Length: 339
Image: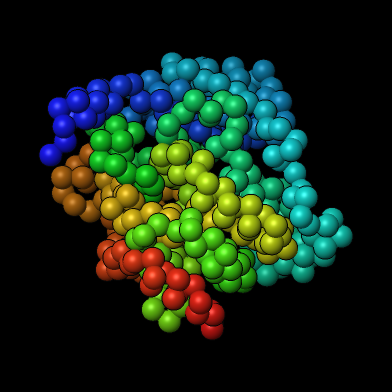
């Protein structure tokens, strides 16, 4: 049992205002799409809480864009510009090799030849949490243009995360396209073996790697994520990102922020620090989650006919596997992926 002063400190921390925001990386051309998203988030949740929106762009926002956003919400809105040292080619790759990789991959998978998509994935993986507009936040909720929120959310997900000691929240769990991450797990294994002191005594790593040491490609689709930002600011996460950046896979392959965030979360957190927001009905082009439990579905306007999560192999795996001790994590890291 905690000492009286410890219990009082915990109670006080639970009553403190939550420093959180809804954050999006957008372009001026995304105005209609992000207006739609913000209207839905306000209607479903934020009208009762008035958390700020932070919108970031690699170009200056136009007056038309700013006016269009202010017209759709009463919540505070902050517009930010990305710094050149965060948005651009990694110093660890060469332009010539990147051009060659884009040409090679352009017909192999979606965004295979897109340079801007790779800039986005690298930024979301290693820099968004470092933007000055996020420096005072404890939590962020990532939003994107042209998504749908199907269900009323009659509580504060940020408070739920804080009060339950949660670090990472998600809605959907697909498998990554193999060709986009051909060397990601092997690169991760090397980081694990070289940085054993940064690994926790227990983790949920078995979600992303099976008992044979093969990468499952399971990941949290990070176009929706609610995160305790102390995780991305940690020494372990920063070390992991820098290791990946030096390897060049954001550009030479197409490492997405979703598999990067997911491997890091599984490798550095415990299962009980991760949370599936099953009750938040959500659609991003390509995948849809609609709750099928009656008490949840009653707050939603979608039907479960084509729902993804109740059929997801990765969601089933999330429910079936548990934490493993550090020694087992290191054994898995020593097994080469044979796929």
